[in-house]
Length: 92
Image (cartoon, rainbow, N blue to C red; front, side, top):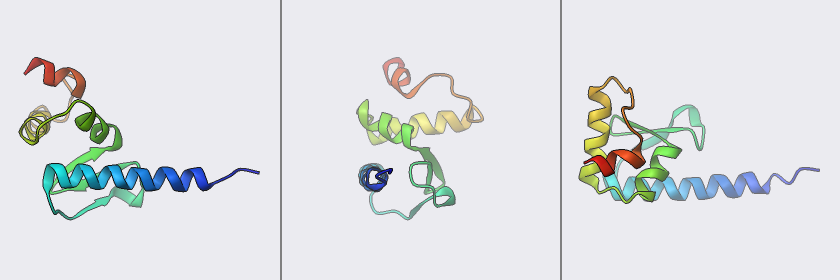
């Protein structure tokens, strides 16, 4: 039998990480999971982030200013990534 409690735990930790990300980078803001898919993509203030992006912005200690600069540059390049979140901060 499969113990599905591990999925519940993962969803809870994913929600905690997401709430931390939003509070740090946006303060109090409305947000939602696209398609109600926890761990997929969120929308907050007309910005879209997948879980890996949120983790990497936190992991590589992006400031608010740097995170928004990266996202704005990504939008200017029609969302074609010229470099990863890990590498971009080293280039700036």
